[in-house]
Image 1 (spheres, protein in one colour):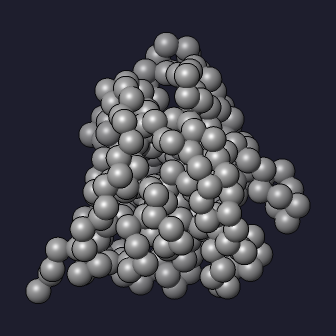
Image 2 (image 1 turned 45 degrees about the horizontal axis):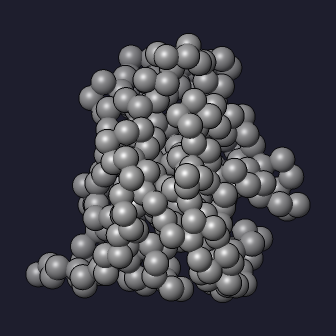
Length: 288
Ligand SMILES: [Cu+2]
C-alpha cells in the first residue's frame, strides 16, 4: 500500500521567465542553515550546520536541458571540453554488454573512459540525445557550464545560493521535502535503487537521467535539486581538494551503500575540465 507523501509546503516565489532558458525563479534571499552535522563524510566539509546569508537572486527551476545546450552550441559554435579531448566518463551500467573494452577508474571501476562520449553522444558513438531533449545536459565541464551561463546572461550559483535554493525554505532537513527518503514509499528524486553498481532496479522510474521537470518541485519551485545530476557551482572546494570546483545535489548513481550524497548539505567536487555522464548544471542570475 503506497500512501501519498506528506504535503510539501509550497512557498513559491514569483516566477520569472518560465519559458526561457533556465526558467529562472526569483528567490528572496535571507539567512538559512547551511550544511549539516551528519558525520558520515567528515572530509567533505558539510558541517557544522551554521547560519549563512544570501542576497536575493534568481535560480533556474531546472538543470540546463539538452535542447537548451544545443541552442547555445548552434548559436556560438562552442565546443565542449569532452568534445575537444575526445572522451568522457560513462557509467558502465549504461553501456551495452558487447561494448568494446574501455579503461576504468581504479578506485571506481564502474566509471569507464569512453572515447567519443560527450554531451551529444552520452553513451559514446552511436548514441544521441534526440530522444531526451528535456533531460539535463551531461558531460559538460565547469568551463563549459560557465560558458553557457555567460551566453545566456546568467552565471553559476555560489555554493551557498545553491543550497539555499535546494532547501526551498525548509529548515535543517536532509532532503528538499523533509528527512525521509521515500515518504509513504514514494520516490521524490532520481537516485540509484538496487545493489550498486551491478543491479539497478530503476524503482524510481529511471535508470539514467530523468527529464529535468520530473518529480514534484521543492518549496521554491526547483525540480531535482537533489538526485538526477550533480550540478556545478561557482565555488572552489577548498584546501582539501585543491583546484576543484564544488558540485552539489548528487546524481542518479548515488546510493546509500556507497555515496550518500543525495542530500541538500552534501558536497563533492571535480576539476574544472572534468566531465562525466552524471554531472550537469543549473543557472543562476542576479536579480535586476
Ligand atoms: Cu553520489
